[in-house]
Amino acid sequence: MDISLNDLWQVAQEAAYLAGRRTLAYFNTGTAVQTKEDQTPVTCADREAEALIRKTIGRYYPDHWIIGEEEGDTPGDPNVRWIIDPIDGTKTFIHGVPLYGVLIGVEVQNKPQIGVIYLPALDEMVTAATGLGCRWNGRTARVSQVDQLSEAALMSSSITSAQARGGAFDELAGQAKLVRTWGDSYGYALVATGRAEVMVDAAMKVWDCAPMPPILSEAGGHFTNWQGEPTIWGHDAMATNGKLFEQVQALLGKK
Image (cartoon, rainbow, N blue to C red; front, side, top):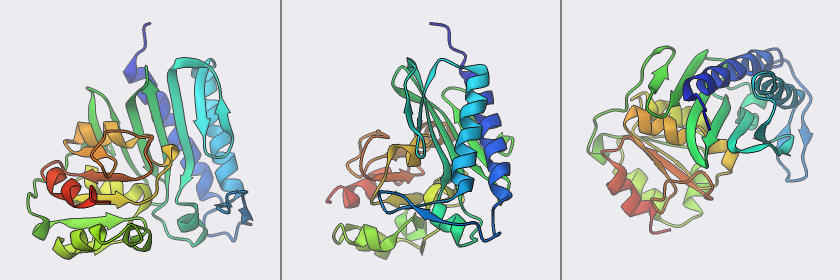
């Protein structure tokens, strides 16, 4: 099977950018909010952005498998699976905070190989393909070289959710230099670009993290679940700059 990672990478970036620009038409406009069956919010921006991503993928790869948060599974070639979240951080989007992202990950033969985080309101794109590097708005992205938790910036999507898992997060936060809830995909982008050292999520779904393994790996960092397993199919997630992986995992692995 002849699959060009570079070609997949270019399409993923195009799809994320187009979808992100579409979301801006609804950002801070008072767009109506609906509640899905799982009690999470959704807007027409989410739905239109996912439809646009699917259309873009289909123009180049009509037979590929697609998993999307809003439209579910579209079976296709099992060797290439696109996993998309049209707005990662819908609650953030609804509240007019510019830290939401468009996420696209591509698994090739069941391995995460392509990752795109596009932050439309900031016009920042962090993207990677296995063996081809990680880029931040076109320039090389690298994690920081901080090797002490006492000098680290710790991000989390929800401190309360992390604390509900037990005392591990509080112990980790107590050792960090800075703790902020610059969460969802923005936190992972910060780690990949050397602006933060640790990002943790106590609850995770596959479309929330599909881009993260290639992005963090190509930037020199780590992406795993709290038990240290490199998977996008877990129920929690952590990213580090690599140098802090063992220290962070030793704490979070307790829960």
